[in-house]
Length: 160
Image (tube, rainbow, N blue to C red):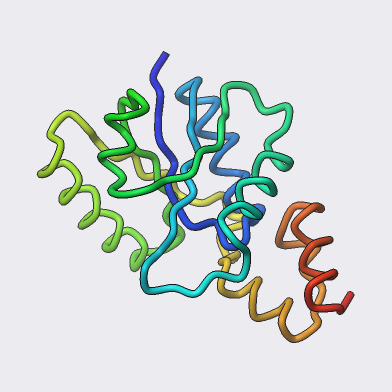
């Protein structure tokens, strides 16, 4: 059964992320969702909060685990014994960025390919950045994020 790594910051986890996790699990059987710290981004939630949120959100999804990612994605692939990386794409801009990352990762670790999954139409418009902006302005994020995430956003920012 292939084991894929789904890396990202997931700040916060969205319904789009969960859709990709479920689809990757169905395709590959085993998925490790790897939460990364991005050196140029300031996070809304701590890594520990994001790990806990994702674990709660994926409860009951077969073959999925959550781990903290430290260092390069390809190093995590080696350490966890992953066969490939899976990433979601919503647009041509995403594709261009992800293709460059895939080529770079493969140049560093030739055995690792990246599989790009197009976002499902129902969630393709959702970005973590958009969710953070709506939450910070007191808006309702319940149609964009899983229940536990919406609850934590309401607690943190008030709103609906």
